[in-house]
Amino acid sequence: MGFLSKAQQIPATARAAAINAGTLQSHIPYASAASSQGLPNYVGFSSPDLLHKFVLSDSAIVSIGHCETEFATGMYLINSSGFIITNAGENTPLCSRNRSSMVNTLGPGTYYYVLSKRSGAGFGLIRLTINLRPLPKSLSEQLSEVFGSLELSRVPYGLLRDIAIEQAELSNHQGALLGDSTLVEQVLFNSLYSTLMTSRVDNSAYNFQDVSKIDSIALINRQPGRVLIHLVKGS
Image (cartoon, rainbow, N blue to C red):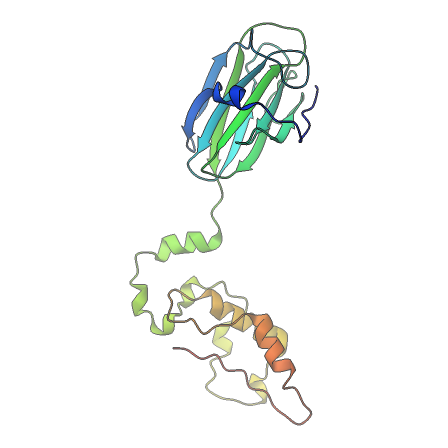
């Protein structure tokens, strides 16, 4: 199929006349069957261009396809200003038989346009489907849901071990006794410190600094015969 130059813009008049799919949400599919007959041609092959527009309520993985269309198609995803985001030709991930499709991660709050067109011989309706899936939640988001009902302001020092992403075994380093057996190398110290940082649940544990800054502070104080003791101060 012909490709749209990224510098080429779909006119505002065409975008204003696009079929409005509305605000789409995850797991609520959108489907349309429309004819492009008589519409202008802006890009690619000399076939009419059919435009749909939609808005996302949240960031999502967006799957768009022409799988049920009866002829070969091409597809462009256009931003709110009319410029290309990406395009799909034939033999794409969701459809067979030379029907265009694409999968993209898109953000919320703006119009997107799908430009559909015939890329070969054939007549009839262009059948468009748009399906959304929510973005996978991060581990920290999942943990926040689990512990969200706790009165986190009552957690001592603002540190909750249950929510920490443990990079070292904290039980082996209680700090009750200082001696040769409690000596840790810098890599282990960084792991312990990072574990404590991930256990923060409210603003009371605000004194933590980035590990790289701790390293830079220690570096200028390293001298022969001097012992450095790293302290993590709770509030």
